[in-house]
Amino acid sequence: MREKQLDPRLEAAAEMFPRVHVGADIGADHGYLTHALLTRGIADRMWVTDISAPSLEKARRLMAQSGLSGRVCFGAGDGFLPVGEPVEAAAILGMGGVTIRNILTEQAHLLRGCALVLSANSGITSLRRTLMELGYRIEQERMTEAGGHFYPVLLARYGEGTGYTEKELALGPVLLKKPFDDVYRRYLQKKALDWAAERGPAGEEKRQWIREELDDA
Image (cartoon, rainbow, N blue to C red; front, side, top):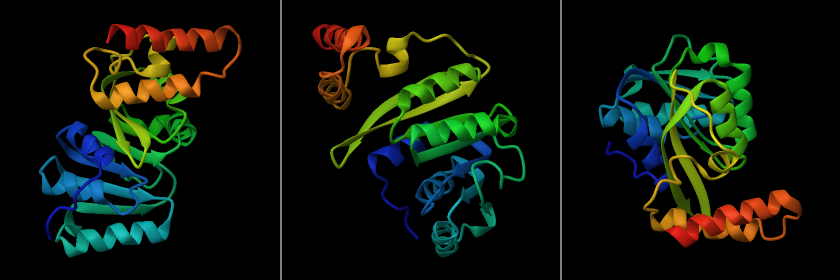
């Protein structure tokens, strides 16, 4: 079976995912990312978990149709709880930032320093802050766009933690490095609209961040 074509968010995650012997796809849904990682030789084996049993069954069928079942362990449950061994890297995509943050903080003992490929539908500032507090450094980050919505995708590694400014936490320390691509530029323009009505010094500071970046781009 040929590899499923990935949307921009999943493609960015697949390209960032480190080469590993054992990885994990947390909240895997249909399992398209795991399918790509295995067929491209990025991972030798994968753990596929989801809190939804029907979603996990979709992933199970996809792997069976592709002859990949022998390289996948499936587990129904929350976050890393079903993963039965240490993994070198894990992806968590398609959830809100608060949900991902809760998984990382409540199950920090299960991370074991694995690399993290993350994409949050919301709450990205608090998620970046959580990574910093857990001792992770954001090594790569890319803004993707689909259906009029923006989805940041990032790779973070443990043990090289650094302090980020509030501006970096809000807009992405790697994404802020110039030159900007067109997707990130459109994202900044959208953030300017989102923050236009925010009152007080905090709102003005955020608008100033946007002006600085767009003026200098």
